Image 1 (spheres, rainbow, N blue to C red):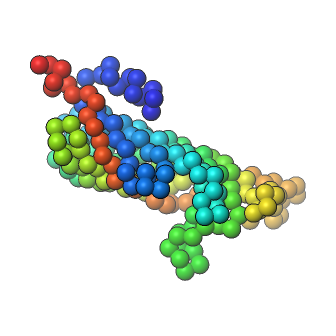
Image 2: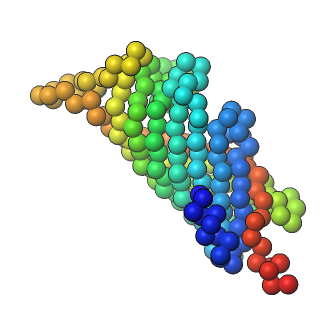
Image 3: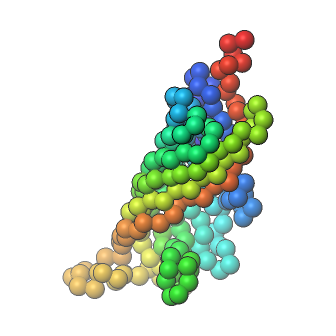
Length: 200
């Protein structure tokens, strides 16, 4: 994101810097940068970082770097949009489970440390609230491939994770493939590059 902030001022495209207000309410940082590339589309990058080593007794630290293409049906940065994204993730957390044990969202009792790559689709809506400010709601659903080690609550590594029962030698390095929601953003953005004003 820092690199994008350095590069974008050298471009002539309309560009917004945004912050996810929804994540901020729980102390998760999610700055975003969106730059218009055509009358109906934009490219954006964002970083999501949870600084919480523990949350309610659970490991809850992770970082996500995401790039996204958006197509707006009305005009770029205004109205409904659909998009595609790709992301890289690192994590140290009790991974969430969806629709497990009769609950929509729950946490695994042990925790994992590792990394993921993800790709998927997104959708949302954006509205200008002044000449420089906009309001943005976005949702992304991705296929996430993860590689990690799992640990018990006391910190001992699990040497025989599920699926490795028949391995000749212990192999703690585990993997998973999941289709899950990866982002929900309610953001406010500020226009940092305005090509129309540069022409005046």
